Amino acid sequence: MEPALQAEHATSNAVRITNRNGRSPIVLICDHASNFIPKRFSDLGLGKRELESHIAWDPGALPVARRLAKALDATLVESRLSRLLIDCNRPLDAPDLICPLSETTTVPGNANLSLEDRQARIALSWQPFHEAVEQLIRDRLLQDRKTTLVSIHSFTPVYKGVKRPWHIGILHDEGRSIADPLIAALKSSGSIVVGDNEPYSPADRVYFTLERHGRSRGLPCAMIEIRNDEIGDEAGQRRWSETLARILAEITVASEREQTIA
Image (cartoon, rainbow, N blue to C red):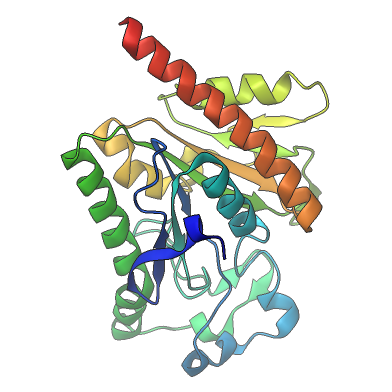
């Protein structure tokens, strides 16, 4: 791995932070980076095909995030355990925090969990992930470092039999300082189908990490969802990371210019 992406800090096996001291104001978050499930969970009763599919992680998201981190000199936070164990991008009261059914796939190892089992999953993955993000942002703000949160995800081209036309979606709430220029720049190519709060929106409760750590502090943030067939190979990952790196760098420069003028 490139020196700029070497792990500088990991609070547990559940989360990794790389390039902690990156110069960019952007902090990249990859909530669904991995499909890894520790052996003691017996793959939750699933087969290889299911564990390699989008129900277990966001395919292609981590390679894109890593390329972006290198290009921007940005910090990257990644979850290192499968979303099937527990979804770090959901509040603890979410019905899909631990899914017994994901899309149309039954997850036997998630059925009829006891309160003790649920608490163990929280302690294993959810809690260390959010504690790491919280500490990172707290440290940055104490150092008076400008901080913008951008989470990187991917989505399946077909969900419950319905095709999704978007190549990429930008999710946001009322804070649009990152989302609006991202959407405008992506649409300007004329060849990219861009979803504005599609295929998801914060109303679907998929904006939790950014709400918890960014919007609660008034920090700029946005969620990027790339259709996973667009980033299924290295060429696609390179193409999208280069496109997004250019746009995010331009947004950062424009923001700094406006603040200087102000």
